[in-house]
Length: 266
Image (cartoon, rainbow, N blue to C red; front, side, top):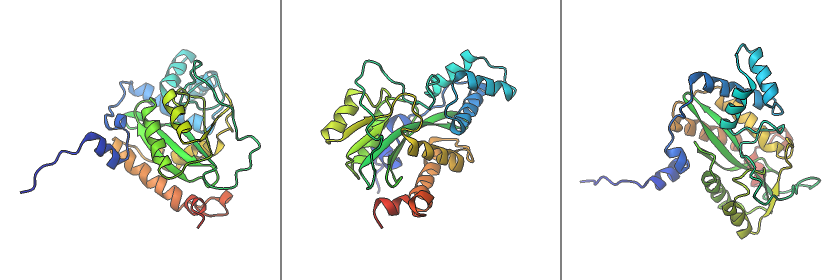
């Protein structure tokens, strides 16, 4: 007789490729209208990442929604969008933490594992939302790891970084100035691997341009044409997409090769 063996939650998350917080996902208690407005905000930010509260409010009013700046600011804060600066900031800076300079300006990036970059974006669900984090090699655009979570805490960022470090130890790691990336746990992990730390300048939309382009591709080619009901739906869709992105999607800037071919020098 085969015994029923209970698989620990940590192992289930590992097998599914999701964070512990993603495993415990429940739809956020947000009204259908506010969720709809958040999705519209996300789409407009994907098109025009320089929109702040005032422009976003004007945009929604022009779409026929009776909203004011106070409401839009609150929704953008829930989404993790920093409205003051002209870029999506899903990780909000903490002034008490040490910041590091941006090391990529003028740097010739000419081989894989020279620079990895990290960012977080909002992923809409049919009822609620998730956050997606990804780590990308700048030279090849290869996505080394990604995770889903329903919170913006540092734990799912650490999990994604652990996965990436099992593949690569870069010379430089670039992120924004968010509290996740200025936390003691995060900084110590990078320093323990002798990785130089680079952080985007505040308000510089182009400092992490390649991963910003990745988010645009993920959303227009996968997220916006699907309607994820559950975390498993999102996992299946994104797993399929990242496999296609890495192994099949040809990039003009890579000489019509795939990120996988460039990263592994095939």
